[in-house]
Length: 178
Image (cartoon, rainbow, N blue to C red):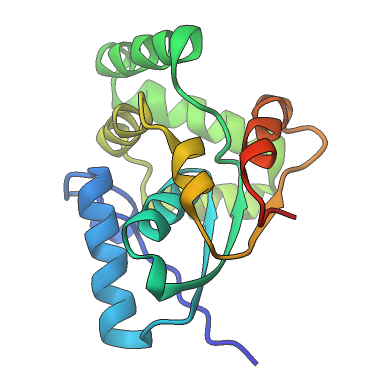
């Protein structure tokens, strides 16, 4: 009953060579929705895609009928923001091979070997990871959710402890969260 489309954000997948910014991602999603789908769209986002979905709904509320979000509840302010900035510096230092090795190891903790291999073979971008992290630091996604009028489904796993820690802040402000 649904047409499902998945975009490779700039700096990721087939767009690995392009620079990621939150604004360019919002524009990318808007272009796709405007040209292919139209308004009344259910926008789904996981992790970085969730932050992009929140920012997209904030900028283009009439195009979003519902949001389904997971793994995008950390607010990168204060100490968490400091650690994220430190992480972006470390990403400049460790190099591509080490970054890919770390990502592969982390993926193996949460998914199968075949899915991990597919993801790794399609390309994991050190620059995309660094750019993505830099773009979410200091952004007030809680405020964006507070303004959102579309119904929002929040999904986090029991073991996603860091996102679970922060989800309560969103639930406090979102009248339309479930």
